Image (cartoon, rainbow, N blue to C red; front, top):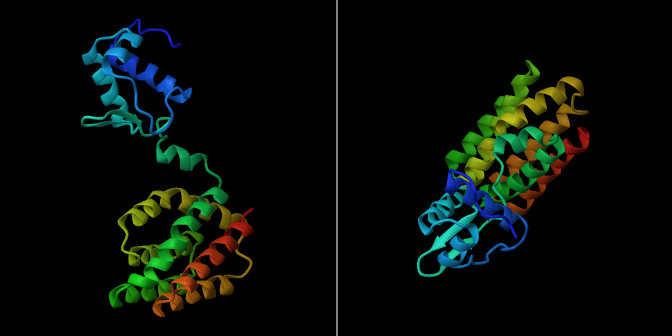
Length: 223
């Protein structure tokens, strides 16, 4: 069993011990923690200190208090900061995550796009075609196009997820294209035209398929 808390600050120490026991699998995901009296005695702290420890872990997404039901495990560890995760990620891992986000977003865009959305997508497509300057300019124009597709899905969660990837994605793509240009820029742009056409035609299956095929080609080109 984990040793009792011996130093201040007690609440932070108690939170660390609770987290260690959760990581060790003592309380699985969705499991209810023992009652306050039992748990406070196990940790060697008062009930007010235990409540503060629970609040600390609740703030980190590990625990959740349910009125009248108790305290439950909602995550088995403290999630890492997105910036740290993305800095460590390979370009292949980032592209795989993009596929998961963008293929679904493309299908939703085909369902939900408005005339204004379609105009934005087509403007971004034209701007992408006209980006004949630096690699950074092409990457920025390409990213702007993909973002218009995601915005057309009208799902704020998907948009925010994509925006989280942008800095890591931008730098990685610039570095990769500087070293190894895409085999066929004409075919790459044609893939974007096919995606736009599927969204315009309100064909979710084709939109998702074109999005996935395009991103898989990028992954294969850089791995």
